[in-house]
Image 1 (cartoon, rainbow, N blue to C red):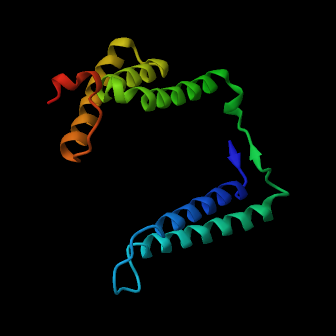
Image 2: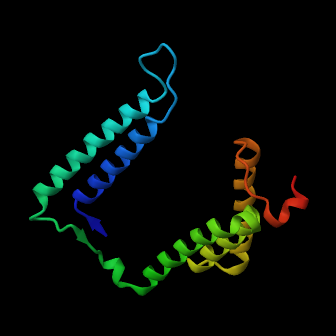
Image 3: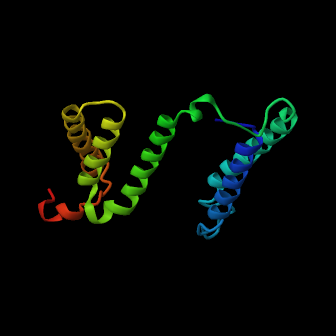
Length: 157
């Protein structure tokens, strides 16, 4: 799928405006002309300028490039099913990870995706176990990001 530059440019401008608006909610420092909102606001201004440049380029190319061009891959039902399954896995994690926990959710998702993309069951389960525990160790122990324990809370280490 290919988009004319007008679409990502518009999205970039919307993101820049949201970032600038959120940065303006940061508390001011007493006696300072600038505060913690300075750099996010400068970045937002830069993103706004980049978005405007993309829009102007896209409007100039509109005759040669349509707004949205769907590639050949989108004609294959297998590819569409892969996208739907991937999005379904993300929605499942968002909805189920709090009560089910990261480890069981990740095991189910990684195994499902590996089997769908062509791995055997045994290989998929082994890789899912290794990947899940590596990710959990990196986030929970090294980066100190709390991951939901869910049903495994009584066995939390």
